[in-house]
Length: 203
Image (cartoon, rainbow, N blue to C red; front, side, top):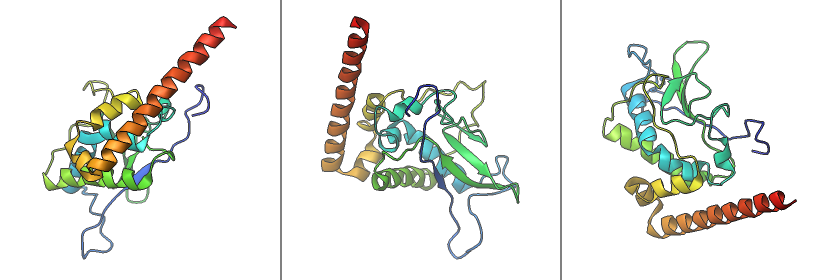
């Protein structure tokens, strides 16, 4: 994000899956469901949402990345999902030809992320949802009071430090080093911003 007057640039991720042995069948879609999403697709999304506050420390891993978390940035700032809403962090996409759900998009991702760590933890969260048959929460709207997402890198790191699943995927050594480095970056950026603000006030 180079300007507070612009939405910023991201690197959004799309996920779908197919049933083993059924090469052309999109297992994410189920038109018979009220949501248009299969049971496995719903559980995958719920697993993703359950861990999203922690995942952000890996998918948007810098102080500047979090400047894209907010209204009008086309990323979403509340914990929830919706269909074809570009201001939702987790968006279910509709195929224009079939008018069926085709994939799910995570909008809070950018090029500063380590793609290997990001994908490993996202897939682990989604697969945990499928394994445990998690039930998808209602679609986000103005009435269901969705919780806010972390508004800073430090907030997301605090969530990651309590997330047993993601810590187990990273392993003890990597997770300890990752959190330590990112927390140092967050503190350094905060001090820098304070110094710049103080200098501007003196000018």
